Amino acid sequence: MAAPLGGMFSGQPPGHPGDSRGQASLLQAAPGPPRTSNSTLVDELESSFEACFASLVSQDYVNGTDQEEIRTGVDQCIQKFLDIARQTECFFLQKRLQLSVQKPEQVIKEDVSELRNELQRKDALVQKHLTKLRHWQQVLEDINVQHKKPAEIPQGSLAYLEQASANIPAPMKQT
Image (cartoon, rainbow, N blue to C red):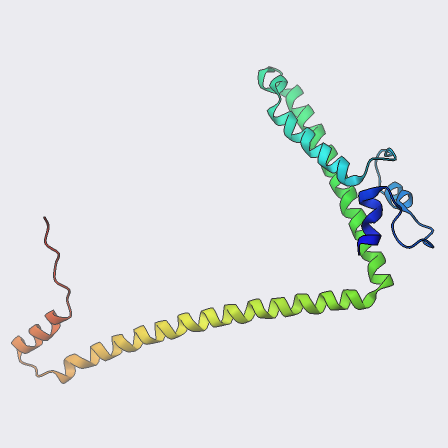
């Protein structure tokens, strides 16, 4: 899969040598300003993110008094970042579509793999719930056994109190 993405990261056109569509057709299909030949979407995304971050920590904005000017500048940086992020997403969706057309068996393999992973995750969740269920069933069974014991004990008031107090933990001494 490195060959189809090669155009985005290196300046080389993606695909096979016989592929008439290159990086330029994919990148210019995305809306936005035209790019320089050495610039890629990833580079632009990185620089726009850095510009967003810089605008938030810039001394000009910290010392500035015009809040509207600060807000406008930050909004413009964020909007540019979002636009380039959309273009990047579009690029990868186009590559995904090309892959699904050229190699449909790869898409099916990925789907099967995702379904297997989901089944494993759900099986683990079921096992976790079964463990908790067994624990609480044991707790309920223990409670039922404790409630049945007083009926089996002779009903002498002293014997009953001694048995009941045996289940109460001793108080801790304060030092």
